[in-house]
Image (cartoon, rainbow, N blue to C red):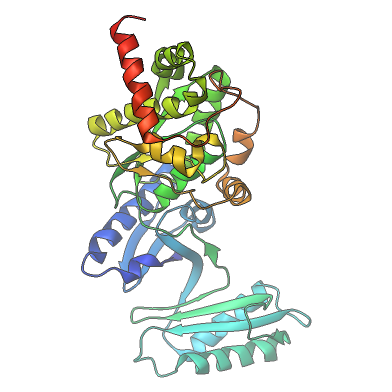
Length: 375
């Protein structure tokens, strides 16, 4: 059986509720293994989680997408003996290609203070043996070509040479449910991913404008499912036209077409709030970034949010477009989001950029009067 060492970050700062967070993390890791056709035993001890499996290489990439994990490494377990640790460190360095002209360092961590050799001593002994055997260049900085890790704990000593980055954050499912508005564009899948990273179980809601836009949204939800271990993404798809067309048509009849984007978003948020009530969700997620388009100016966000009965979460609010694109590429949604252009058929020629709540309420009253008159 092979062994994978999983490290969590933020969870270590939790107090008495850390046990519950760790329990959910282990559940999600097991779900990750199962959904990828892998078998293994998941355990935890101290501030580490372990996966014992015969499919180490196959498990690494899926596990690197489990929220709550800061990093992971395939490790070799050896006796808690300095000679055994040094021998395995040399073997790992040789496998990693350490030789003249290739720099290396040893990074030891002695979590068990009863072990007779402190971390700097382990670094010196293992590093000296590697240099003597392989003649690699010693570089104590993080810029070294190869880092050999040593982790000494009460229950085991582990040696490793690879550290894979995890997504960090909190285990999915520890912070309740949210409804996420998902379009076929770049921003909204990234916003949903960021709330998943903070432990939220996401309920995707898509308002369909055409087949291509809906296909893009559903494909992006499929990408997000590769991170949603422990929670199944079940998208709700509604007709955009059926949701907003009656209101927007009356708005145009009033000669207030510049308000179309604001009233459109308010209508979608009201539908999302109703879905929250139906499915037990606590908030609504949007892909807004401050100032990116007309409906995302601060005055317009105030108007759009006014009176909505659920909290509106905007995790991209302080990001610029380049940062959002970088994250979309990392997640894997960027290519799908950009495979075709789409423009809303209700978009006015000159969208309003600085609405006010008072004016919105006045227009809403006139729209209600028109509806009551059947016009």
